[in-house]
Amino acid sequence: MLRGGASMRAELCRPWGPVFRGRAVDETVIDQHLGEHVPDYAAPRLPTPSMKALEGAVRRAKSSAPGPDRLPASAWPLDERLLQVLYSLMVGLFAGREPPWGLNFSDLAFVPKGDELADAVDVL
Image 1 (spheres, rainbow, N blue to C red):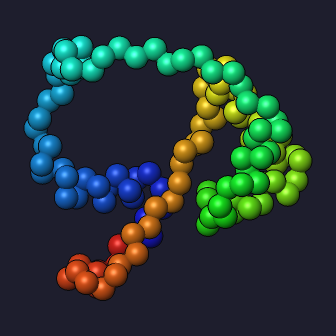
Image 2 (cartoon, rainbow, N blue to C red; image 1 turned 180 degrees about the horizontal axis):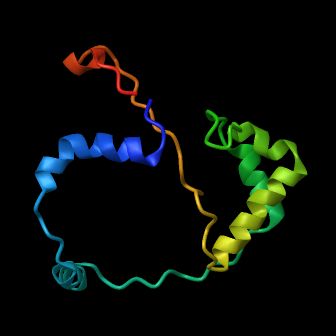
């Protein structure tokens, strides 16, 4: 399993590097394309859900494998302090504050199924 940004970048660059090598990015063209094809969207201002609503949603969530925090989803409703962490994060996001660094970081693993020739090759 790849861990750390440098090793993941290197692995992504190995097959994709030759595809994009030498191609410049013209932000003017990107802005023009977005202006012509992507309509402006003003997100509706939604009220911040209550702690009770968050607790209900967390309790109804299906259990999942542990994430980077090493907690399965079923652990969050077990302790009021954990719910308070989630609630504080949610309130901040609803108020437009920047999320904490690393909020959406995760590990990703593609488990070989044995059907492809490359499944016998380990990438660490």
